[in-house]
Length: 171
Image (tube, rainbow, N blue to C red):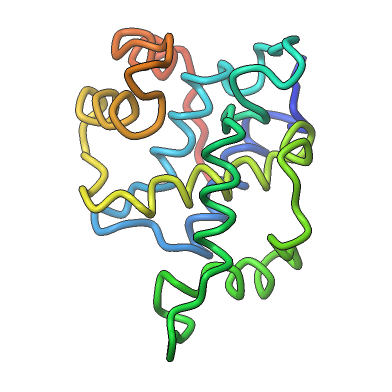
């Protein structure tokens, strides 16, 4: 049974790819894969349901409240003279591609909206200056450092094991 508004794992893969098409897929062209793997580590890609109200995070990618509001503020800032190709125009890109205005989104909205979860996960990785690694082990370290943090219970080994359980999906 899928949770967090996902219909299937393929549905989640399609959402992650659409979000990366909107916000950029990174220099190594693998931001979509990093988001997919993050969902695998955080909720077994929607198969694990966190029953803790307002727990460690919300949605299929378990975005915590502090990170959500910090990213929302960053996405709403617009650098002077920003255009569609600059990272500082994230809000406009999301409005144009998905019809979602981040000004109106609240943390609880991530609970059953995988699109919002993947948007905030992609935004989280966008603010990191270090490029997303290309290897699974490199991505596990990157996730632990930039997403799960030293305070998070997740381990590098957990990330790798969770990703290895994901079925292969071709889109």
